[in-house]
Figure 1 (cartoon, rainbow, N blue to C red):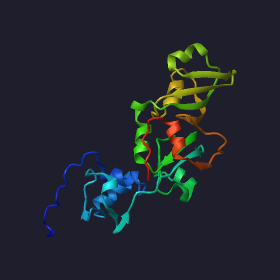
Figure 2: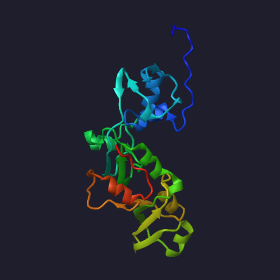
Figure 3: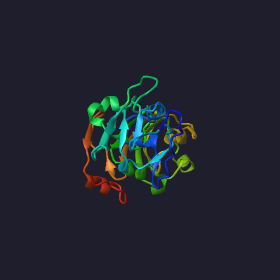
Figure 4: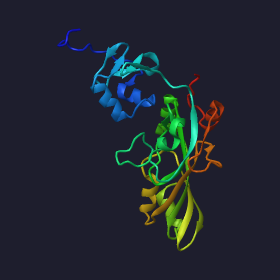
Length: 244
C-alpha cells in the first residue's frame, strides 16, 4: 500500500464488537486508551493497521497486536471482590481517585468489572476475563437480582416504601436512621439513592451483599476470592461460561 492509498475497508463481522471495546473487554486498556491507540495507528488486526475504533471484530477469531506485541485473550478467571467504599470501578480515574484495579494490583490482570458500584457504595463486585459472561449478567433482559443493605437518615414510614419500589424490607428504624434491604433486577446508576431521595431520606451507607445467588459472605473490604465455573453456573442460571 502506498502512503496515499486509502485503507482497505473491512467487511462487517457477524457477532463482532467495536475494536475499541474488544481491547477494553480483553482487559488490555481502558476504552479511552483503546480509542487513542487505534487512532494513532498502534493497533493491528490480522496484520493490518486499523485506525477506526468502530471496526467490528470477534476477539477470539482475530490476531491483535498493540505496539507490535500480540495480545491474547486472558485465561478464564472470575473473582468476587469486596469493593471498599471510596474506590471507583474504573481502570483509571481522571481525578486521581483510587480504583478497584489499584486495590487488586496484579490480581486484576486481564479482568473486567461486571457492572459498577459507585464511589460511595461498597460490597460485592464481580470481575472476570469472560466477556460474554459479563455481558449476559449485566443485560437487563435477564433480570439478575442484586441485594443491597441500605442505611438512610431518619425514620422511614413503611407505608411509603410501596411508592418507591417492590423488594424493599425495613429491618430496623429509629428517629436517627433506618436500616433496610433492597432487591433490584438491574443495576442502573445511583438507582437506590434516587429511590430514597424521592421519599426524603438520604442514603448514608450502601452495600451490595448479593448478586444472583452469590453472596459476599465473610470477605472483608479489599479481599477477594477466586470462583469456580460451577459457582457461576449455580449463581447465574443460564449464563454462558467460557470453557477455556
